[in-house]
Image 1 (cartoon, rainbow, N blue to C red):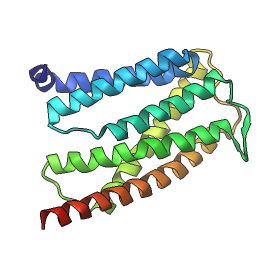
Image 2 (cartoon, one colour; image 1 turned 120 degrees about the vertical axis):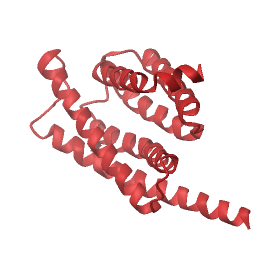
Image 3 (cartoon, rainbow, N blue to C red; image 1 turned 135 degrees about the vertical axis):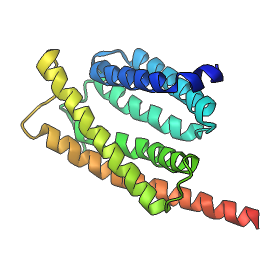
Image 4 (cartoon, rainbow, N blue to C red; image 1 turned 90 degrees about the vertical axis):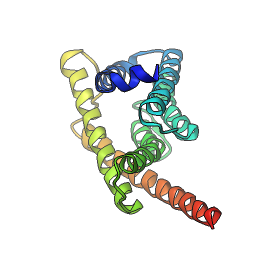
Amino acid sequence: MSEMFRRFHFPILILMFLVGAAFLLKMCYLSLAFNTIFGLGYLTFFYFFVRARYGLTVPPVLLGLVLVGVEVDALGNYFRMYGQALGPLQYDEFAHMTIQVLVTPLFVWLVREGLKHAGQHLSLGFTTFFAGATIFGLSAFYEIIELWDELYFGGQRIWSTRDTSTDLQFDLFGIIVGAVLAYALLRRESARLVLNAN
């Protein structure tokens, strides 16, 4: 299996990207059970792929946070919370912000480990910034997926002329909070490893 991951890593990455994008396109129309099972399966495959291909063991807690992010969206759809208020926010705003808080630490960890694997040693601050910019780019791609759903598949995911900009604003808030959290945790982990080495 690990030989297959090494040999076909580029096609597997493209397939994972396409499957993930297709899931995001249809996720809001799928059942809570399907979203949960798919999320578990996709993240498990990702865990074993990264481990076999790159020799990296992704901390399960980070993958768990991503799964919780999937559940925030899936539960919002299941209980028809989108378009409803949740405290001072609309559920859509809450979901965009919360999902980014939950997903960003994994991105920061992956970027840090990926750079190390490539022989690049950048400061944790720059790595965190780069990861945050990357995930914000992916958030913008998600907004394009919502647009495609509206234009080509008859979906109803853009609620107003300000929906996309509002989504991106709350994505940005969540990314900043998630990046600060990831930075603090990884810095603490690095300090603990230095102390243990001495």
